[in-house]
Length: 337
Image (cartoon, rainbow, N blue to C red; front, side, top):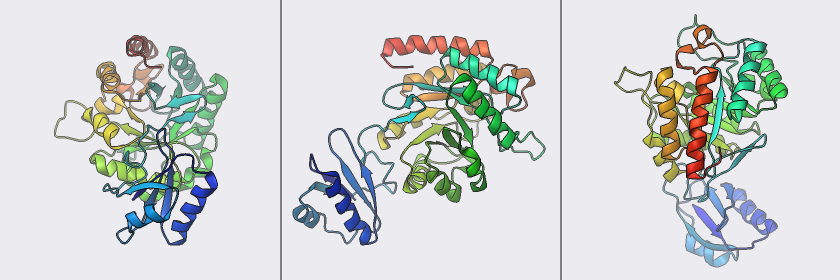
């Protein structure tokens, strides 16, 4: 249930209104907007008389029931697009933010060289894996805490925000210097982890699971948001289908559906979607055309010798050429890149 508030309601009045409901055992979510502010009531609201609330409470303009299971993530509750500030960068709201970097952090020289080149080409955020979920236990699993330190070093040297993946709750204390915490596709329904990252006080990038529906994806975002994090970025990275020509099948239409259902920013990871370097530029352009808020692209200074997923990583020059093309598109569409 969502209560749409009248204009110019004081902060104290809103606080008292929320406290009244929370004292009755409900949870509340505050959703400020351009046209109106709202308070979302979470819990069993079947016995709540909406009309009575509107008549009795002077700050409520009207109320309506939210039919979706996800409340905080729903555009019904929060009509305006959410803007997420990260280290001087804003994700969402019509801009196009590119996140780039290697699948995994390997050496100080590697991550700094990639960070410098990617930033020069126009990337706004550096990605790099320290903890790597791999299908085989014998594959390279990442450098762990050492990888986080190298990523942090690159952040300071190049002056660029960083994002990396968390694998479990025990790793949370190591992520103090990380700007965006990534939850990977394999962990999309690791609900204990989702609750934990929601309490970390950082933006969270949530990847869609390999076989997850869009509503399941949004329910996972709801877990993060119900734990206190309103800054969630949704990442479509391809789903598993019967097709074997590409690593996964990029669901480009998911951007359109998500934009209708939720106020959260939506980006695309074309690298994991196809797993083939040659297809990444075309899928990146498609992401821009369909209205995504950005990209997460794998970039490596020497893909042939990458320790992880080199076949899907662009080299530095390929990334530069792609970014030049996207900048031309952005000028035509009057979007900030």
